[in-house]
Length: 196
Image (cartoon, rainbow, N blue to C red; front, side):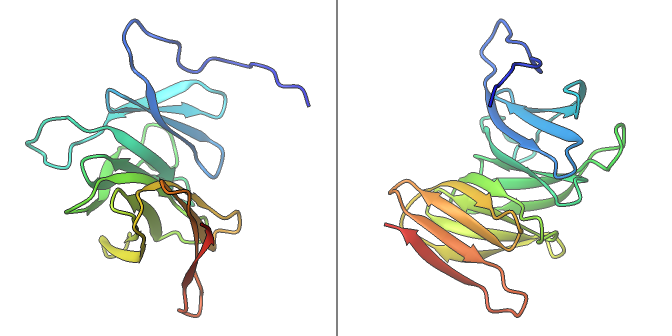
């Protein structure tokens, strides 16, 4: 396999503006990149910058002293979930076409722990999953705007990913453990530890 550089999407600037999160939309039409200045840049499938927007702090009157810790597109590619270190996940409705009005359609505020990572399983259009600094993995239910605990561990959640079929997630933790959670259509969801 031969790799080749095709394009630089965002050239370096004069100041530090590191990229804190990246994600592709499931329809492969959009790429979102969040930078340390808390701005989400949106690119099309050819790598052309099409739009950008500033994220909002959890406290509307509060200071912007948070960072974007993760992002995930909804399965239909019309929404973008943005996880932030100030204990909140905002879901932005972007629409399916460029130029549509952006708005916040969901908020999942956590009272006691920062959000470290996020994933949105393809077969769970109304359920996004996020990990917390206290080791808890939660699901944000889009229809009700409520968060529920899927399971809790004793270790900071460092990473999350969805299975390709959209019926399971994996969580990685700072102590080296890996947990799997399976969504079951029959209502009997289960989780188990895969690695010590």
